[in-house]
Amino acid sequence: MNFQSAELTQQVAQTARDFAQQHIRPHVMDWDESQEFPLHIFKEMGKLGLMGVLVPEEYGGAGLSYFEYKSVIEEISKVCGSIGLSLAAHNSLCTGHIMTFANEEQKKKWLPKLATAEWIGAWGLTEANTGSDAGNMKCTAVKDGNDWVINGAKNWITHGNSGDIAVVVCRTGDSRTKNNSTSFVVERGTKGFGAGKKENKLGMRASETTEMIFDNCRIPDANRLGEVGEGFKQSMKVLDGGRISIASLSLGIAKGAYEAALKYSKERYQFDQPISNFQGISFKLADMATEIAAADMLTLQACDLKNRGEEVTKAAAMAKYYASEVAVKVANDAVQVFGGYGYTKDFPVEKYYRDAKLCTIGEGTSEIQKLVISREVLRK
Ligand SMILES: Cc1cc2nc3c(=O)[nH]c(=O)nc-3n(C[C@H](O)[C@H](O)[C@H](O)COP(=O)(O)OP(=O)(O)OC[C@H]3O[C@@H](n4cnc5c(N)ncnc54)[C@H](O)[C@@H]3O)c2cc1C
View (cartoon, rainbow, N blue to C red):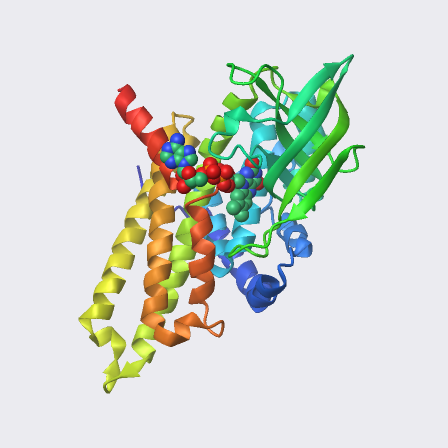
């Protein structure tokens, strides 16, 4: 594997970096404070191909690889984790599910709209009482003639309100049996489909997180993705890709926090010298740099396997688990480097600190990643 970033990857990273500096950085704290989901930013990113990075060109996407995708999520998240999270959810969850499991007709219908950000995508697996234990879902879809009728709710859904289209995984068989769930596409405006409570969050506040409610929501069988009974299996495959997204998001946050701390450590004087002269600070920077490099390698490894179509479950879980824990640690240390100033909203590190924590929770907690990794390790 060649760890040297290719010219194309560097160009794509530069595009995302420039966009983030120009269009996102000036507004980050306002959006955070007001919990505004800046829809127009996603429409703009759509024009640059950032909303369909992995979607083949024939469906209106940029047709790039996971290396470029990683760099896009990372560069945007360096500036704002919330925008990085929403970008990741749109690209790899909703769009990723349709790209992987839809038939040709369905792909032609939905992918061009998603890839250009004409439509924003949501993905609903989690419910109020079934997060880590997602297979025990209660939201049901019942066949009625050539339609399906969905009843129940999905919680913690990124773009649950603003999304124009949602992939929803519903139970279609008996509770606690194998192959008892199925995936469907539900378009906004379908009768019986609406949004519920919007979460008031610690971090990632500009990324919209809401409940999706289904009340006798009737959709045609043509909106079913793949076979009946395959919803949970499909979701686990989608989450393999999703975990590469969250590892990239974590890396972006960690790198943003590290770069801020590095710069500040050279500018801040105490005892008549820059604080970077103190080993207590410089060793923190050494740990940050080392752990970020290790997380980067794990994420690149997962991207490489995914690009080659190889088994990626263990590698993606390792990358997500390690990079997210590193993001939390690095952001915590960055606040420490800034001292009292780091505890205020005048400096960027408190936001990295708040945003980073989501990375150890979303798309499977760190404990669930260890469950996945240990299962894979013990299987051999
Ligand atoms: C900002 C945000 C955005 C999100 N976006 C989406 C989205 O777009 N779509 C979607 O479907 N979901 C989304 N989620 C949901 C997210 O994936 C879940 O929150 C996550 O999977 C954890 O589920 P839970 O919150 O129910 O925690 P729980 O499952 O209740 O876990 C609570 C604690 O118990 C631990 N635990 C549970 N089971 C085990 C076990 N077997 N072994 C060891 N420890 C265990 C967990 O690790 C955790 O520490 C989002 C969540 C957030 C916060």
